[in-house]
Image (cartoon, rainbow over the protein chains, first blue to last red):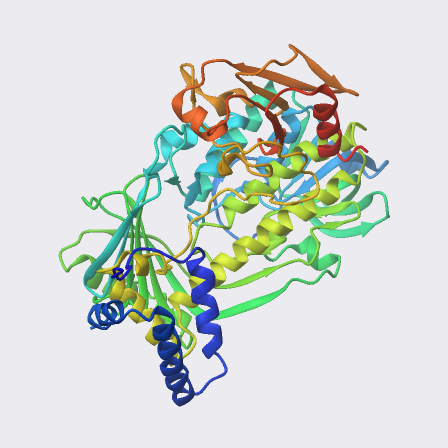
Length: 61
Length: 536
């Protein structure tokens, strides 16, 4: 089992953050909420590992 | 002539000069408009190189108010090269540590100088008027030693006529107007640049709808000399964010983010400011208000910095938000970049096209600064509900997890600009360290009893580390200084050799790296030097 990585892991964090916010810029609050839900599901599927996902759910609490 | 501001130091009082008789119009090789930190740094650099320079300023000294306070390592290195680095460091407050708070809680802290082996600290805090004063004092020393420089105070440029290969200026003085001409006019006249206005050049960008209140207070306090930044501070009236930062002479910079819809006059009332400061420092804090101001800001730049015989440097060419200390620090890098190129062009040693590279390199620098300061501002002032939800999620996680700290943005503090992939660069022929790649400014490192950058005094330099090199080098009138190092200090080896055994670096007069090779090859070195001077 791999461990949940909570250390810096994105090469360009400012660029990523910018892109994330920009993805929401034309959306209503409701659309943004739905977008976030889809994004979480897509990222969760990419991670796949159930133990890592469980640890992420815990870390976000 | 109207005075726009009070002066903190009267450094160049008006004196009538013979050229004002209007009998003949004098042509100058270089005229700099604006005696701020950028104009004076550029003037100092040029006069040290022996290129005659005239500075025109519409006041007789340095404006009151601290304004820029954070001077970065690269600026201190440039000042060192020009001879006033020690005095800046002597007066300034050194700082390396920043702390970030969210509400009442400290989220994390960072150290900007994790590595030793640099002469200059990551940052000093110093009120801008001192920077300007020390630059002028250095100019006076050069002047006394015969350097060709003149500063004319209370000389206000009221018209600029671009004649193609020179400009004609009309200058107003207390004794009335006169005219002069310049082969090159460098506009260092600030964000509202009258020269830019007179030439009808645009200055497009993004306005940020926010107001920031600066209160510089004088107090004895035992806070450490660190940058403390609060998101959503818990103290009353602070607004969306607040900043506390130490300056010399027991002055502390406090910033409050007030939002967009405010009444400036009301917010600037001393009682109102004191209420805010009291809430931050506690009811028993004893302090005096030294200087207060409300500012808004824009992120924008001129499309091109070079317009025939008129070049723009500093705030006249580009403006950023203050978060990141990228205003004055980038302007000083403009001056550093321009001085040696202009000197070679004026002396006929390089073609005028070399100045195009000033535009290319510093427009790149401005874009980098605008990008960073725009992102910081968007983090400080989220533009939508969802943006704020993410911002607060990042702050919330940053207290616990390292990854989120990299996303917290209270200003990405100024680091030296790297001219990656730009026109003047030549060969990068060995797998040396990334930090000293072609286009970067030379990282400092200990050498002998001092530091490497002490040896890079404003000429081209050939640096040979564990490598054979000639004892002298001159290429068509441009001489390079030779530095041979056989037993490099560990930090120097780490920064310039990495896992390589030997290296030859060709370094520009502004300490940026032109090219590097594992061993000396005369033809390649000569070609790279000519290339860096725009000579093909």
